Image 1 (tube, rainbow, N blue to C red):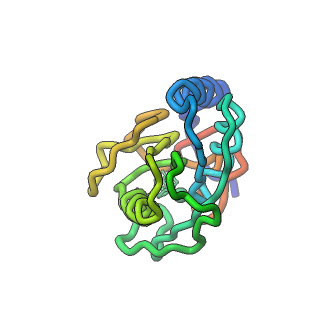
Image 2 (image 1 turned 90 degrees about the vertical axis):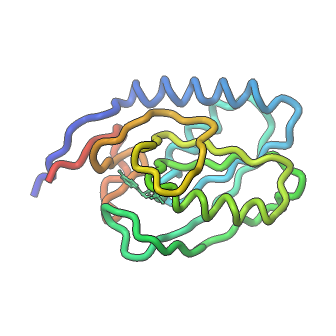
Image 3 (image 1 turned 180 degrees about the vertical axis):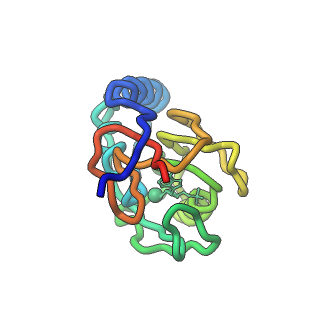
Length: 173
Ligand code: IMP
Ligand code: MG
């Protein structure tokens, strides 16, 4: 069965934005000890593209959180499923997320990472659904602001499907 989708961001839209974000991050992190941390699973494609647009020495690591029973909505309770392996003490940490919705995941991960005493902590998210925020979290490097619909592709899933699609589409039901 074919799932109906509406194209929201083309490969070119995404590539242009990732290049701009990479330039901003390169400018801001001169002389820093940058550690890019990808939030699994959704950020894996965005992160792979983004780090290749950052013209600086950096290290990469991953973290994974999950909220109970989430498919096309976020439930309240968040658990850590995989922790960071590198030491973050006195490092400049850039947390990379696919999409920020209620803000609950990021608020949880931010607090978790701050306990590891980084020198700085900033957030880069490809998509910011800022109007849906329930918990205040600021995205330092936002890509696109999109408030409508449930999005899939370029790492974003619905029940673990569609992550491999090269563009971002709205799922139509
Ligand atoms: P939050 O905790 O409500 O901010 O939710 C963030 C997480 O929910 C993201 O990391 C995504 O995994 C998931 N999410 C939120 N909106 C979407 C969407 O439109 N498509 C796919 N996943 C989404
Ligand atoms: Mg996610």
